[in-house]
Length: 222
Length: 269
Image (cartoon, rainbow over all chains, first blue to last red; front, side, top):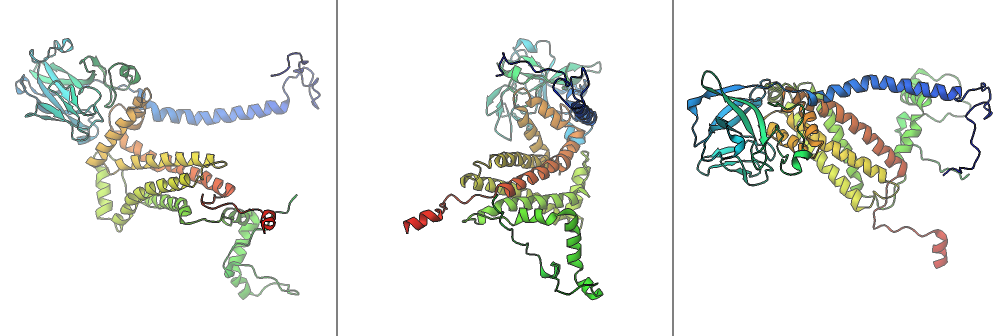
């Protein structure tokens, strides 16, 4: 700590006896030139670094347009069992951009959750909520089973075993004028089947999870 | 000021050593002698303008402690694994196409099945990556168990940890490039593991994928990280790592006892 009773040093360079200092000058020319050169260098570096960085992280903030895709006639699906359909999530990368979705009709007896009211069809994503492997509907067991790390889900997509942190994701559904079922954006649900904007696998949505894993601007949302 | 110890002359082959001038010998050398001394002349020419030989002697002709053994070669073994990856990687890049709609897999198939020695070079790169990871961990274990991370070498340990993380980044990004089923699903799982970090994790996943879903630019992103971003960082940090090794010297194994000063030994005798 500086001694507060010490005499304050003058801010003028002449009084501080700098050789060649001007009257009333507070910054030496050498110091000023050094600062100017550093500032110019920083501006020059920022001029190429900032755009390059923004270019690299830009896709995080780019929103994806909502797509609806027809997956077949209404008659294809029933109330009691899932029918697998193929949905294109990303049309640019061929087969890698496709995913399997399990679809059935809304069933008053089992879809008792208030959040599912008014949904004509239930479409369950095959992307495991643990780390994103493709789950398979096993009819005999009435379970969705993941081949990678043993995640198991029930008929409604709720976790019943293994490492997944939330139920299977779902897709918005609607029926178009040609009586065909259309699937829209994906959404995530917590263990009470409450809806959230789409999250990646491995991100819990119960309790503090919904705040620790925020919705991102880039996801396709309705 | 104490006199600095004289460093030994580098063991240059005799053909490259300048001949000692004989007394009374002056005037221009005969063309045959000039040709004979061409090597020494070139080395001298470069050294006179760069003083490189001093740096080379400083870096290579160091004193090493008693008890230095084969475990001390794990670091240079790791570096040679890196050099092998760098060289084979550069040549693989001449054939590889980061095209997600089939071209990437096709170019790898072409390298493996049709290019002369392609399977061998790709095999070196593929298996060499595992060798490098194993060597990194053995080198780290040697440093840990010999206590070589202690003062004044903490910073070198920190640089080593960053090098370990960068090596794992190389393994992760390189795994996607063949773009077969295994590569695709391993990357899906790996990116989702990144995403499980709270708050920033989801954004890191988006950065890696170049969007909210695995897309057309994910592969080129991984390719750029794998062959431009991380190798540059790796090479620079290996340079810093080696500089500190040369600057600080190596440690003796923990079972070597320090020698007593001469006065104490004489007193005991």
